[in-house]
Image (cartoon, rainbow, N blue to C red; front, side):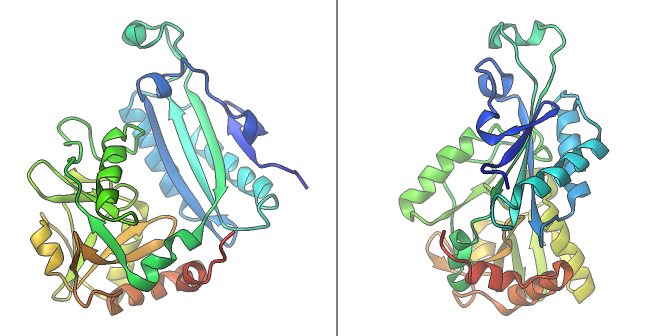
Length: 307
């Protein structure tokens, strides 16, 4: 059994400690990098092709040409999970994808005029720390809207999943000043809800689930799963502009995200949403999701041991 996890770097499987980027990599120097994340259920990557297709669309938008085909990337992921699960005692894993524009020793000033670059391609894993989200499921998350606003789609398309997240780092710190456990919920420049730093955002009111409009946020794979479950449950789903007024007056609010699937939100900026507790429609959707993946997601989160 290997004593440390394996990562993938530029065509090779290496020890995770040896998976390092040069200081002149443009992902570090100017943030020219895209990313994605997929999780396993029962040791199998969930909706793997959907995630990698989105990853490759991000690469194309960012003018980064992947050095491996989509099919090759899927095989790399499957092998990486197979190699690393024994290292982590067969716990569920997250697989992170990271693609940069490559190494340019001329640094950022000459980036635009550099010779053809070879992209840096990384895949790595880590065990999902379910206990970190258990309070979401038992008490509901507390979302806080920080002063910093979401990057407008006129500047950078919200459809790309990228590493340019300094605004979210700052927003995270701003929200945590109000509540150390707060989940930052970002608004656009017009005051409409966009998304959280690691999840989408939904409200449920009068029997209908409402999402922010697509130009303002990354359409998540977990959000897509929610829409499919809603269709099976015959629950209407619409997209429209949402303000904080709409959130605090909703019956329920949720955070769809790959690691924990769907978390309930019980407060926004200190104001209770609905009953102020995880709601019945949230649990109905989560239980349906559990049936799809062959695992009790609620139990997985709420009964997770602290490592």
